[in-house]
Image 1 (cartoon, rainbow, N blue to C red):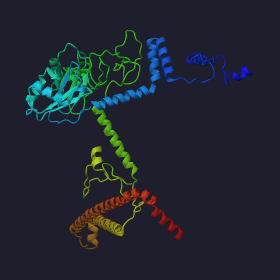
Image 2 (cartoon, one colour):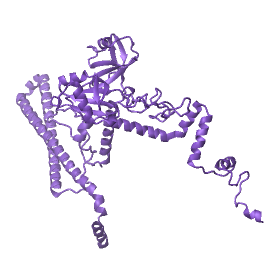
Image 3 (tube, rainbow, N blue to C red):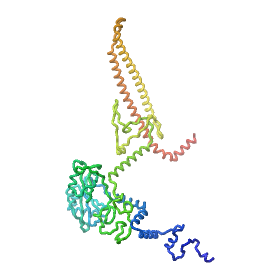
Image 4 (cartoon, one colour):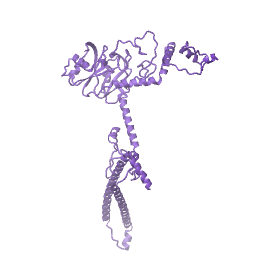
Length: 532
């Protein structure tokens, strides 16, 4: 009994309950049973490292990608967004020339003041403080470059001739070039022979056959050539000599340093060029033959950062971002229009153009007005209404002056309609009289001898009748023109009334939920119900 009492309350077959057995022995004994084992974080990391050491590199890489999962992808996307946002420059004067200065020899702009950099550049270029009073210097610490803006050609020429600058008592080599000016976009053509020089490339591409091309530049020693275009569009094809070559929109790559493996700058401007870092796991001073898991910083998948197979290697061009933004704003504007209730008022929809379409009097026509999303956003067109006159609007009321004016317009319209019907009747009777007189004239010509035998018949003056008919037709046409003008005025008045009704409806609909939630409104409503 004593032995049974000293035994543990819960025991599992094959598990050692002695204090000498460690956590690893317990975990090995628990494997294959129905019990759930809770492990510490350090134990899980230790087991994962042991499994990684016992597997080949390829299998470890795939397993690492599976374990990272969506979390690594989210981190990579966040890193890419942070780098792109931090790389953006402030708004610089459009009239100034932009000159890019790329420092070498491990100059870290994060640890150097902006004033010290600007002083070093202007001192090395031989530009005094008075001469550089209108110039600007803006370092980009993410890309580790410096942008100099100047409006003086003399200063620009001196800065472009720089070879070295002295910062904190140390000489640093620099590479300087001028950035493209104006509104331009970049395209790229591929598979261009590498033995063609820059001058020959410019002769083959920059000519009258390609009027929008401003310049060309080869990407290092590859077969791809960047082409600079005026405006905001990249043509699908350009002429290279006598050949027509396909041109693609240039996508800027995410800059990845091949020395320190950091994202944002290139290897030629690396602030830490002497650091020995593993390109896979970023371990400093790695030992030969050490094992690690490949993980891309841009997409979180199992390949090197910035590899050719990485789909997140390229940035979205500014032109594409701008078009997407315009489409989103256009869709949002359309959705805002759909949110407003339509009035069941009685103006027919025009066949083309906006709701307030220009009109002309006397049977003339006007061209439809078409507007882009920007003009719509600034001056939104009135909301189109469906057919059928209506004066009742939910949440709005018509003032007595407006109702009297509407009745007056309707009475005038009915009066004009009756006058038009009477004019049509008179015109029909005149036409009948003219046709009857013509028939009488034909009969007189055919039966002239018989009429002479019977007796003399007085002749009818047809000319006077025709003149009277012409005058009547003129009067009818002028009356029709006046009726048309009155109808146009009535339509305009109806449109104005619809606008007034819509203006009354919008604030009432906006205030309706606030009025209903007001306790005074509830109390008055309840009292009215009790009185009823």
